[in-house]
Length: 379
Image (cartoon, one colour):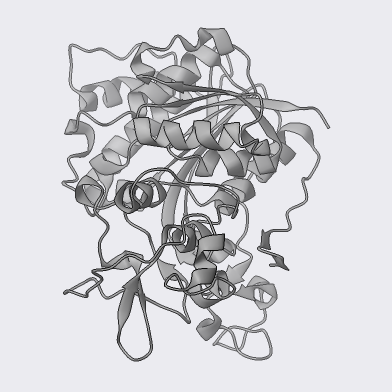
């Protein structure tokens, strides 16, 4: 199979990068601004982690990068900072200086890849942001369209809408077919209920019939013993596996307070866990709640285990890495708070791999092995 190459913006600690490597992409460069996340990437590359072999890991501001040097690459990917649209933040959206979608679009315009994958929080799809999402989508469809800095974004949106009406179905110039899809990571075998939005685009000269991958797992309470849903109808859901639980994800790890925990990377007991309204931890018999980076990197109650007796403790960094489906040989640097911030901002590796494999198949016509493993157990 042809070796597909990619670049990635806003790489963080590497969840998207590792998953896309599993899907079949070889990374030429990863760009990230946060120094601690870059240290984690470089450290794992130095350890010889195969997913990072041979790629340049660059700490820098993507606003200063000339992406024309990657012209014609197979894939541009990234997770633009989600704070502008996060339900846990101020949700300033397009008025937030951290909105990096314009840079993601510029990267597409300059590199002109065969395809792109961008990921963000589901808060982006709130009604308050609907027009801005359409503005993002149309810019991705026509990345070379000259938006003006002298008018507001909504005026640029109207200009783009008129441009689309004029060109119709014409494939002249740089144009992409753009798909926007919301996915729950738990529906793809990840032991975490993490809702993410994906923007996936294919250059208009690429002939492919692509759709977002179908779920492989489902909440078991909606499935009966016969495999049909609660309405008794056998449909596509009848073949779905039950969600993977937090207990399944971490059951082979020793207690972080035990001596055996010292044999594991990042598996250190963290004191101070307590519940408060709206933050009660994750039950063991369900997928974990979405890990959060928290304000200034301090995680909230989602990053705790809730035991049947009502007691709680913080997830260790290693347990959190399991929840995000990072491999056990992947090491996170920094304090517990900093490592959890990196994990709270990450894309689940296996979810990235699912999406990446579907794009690889669309670009090459060849499917990549879609089986996912969790530890030594096939899912």
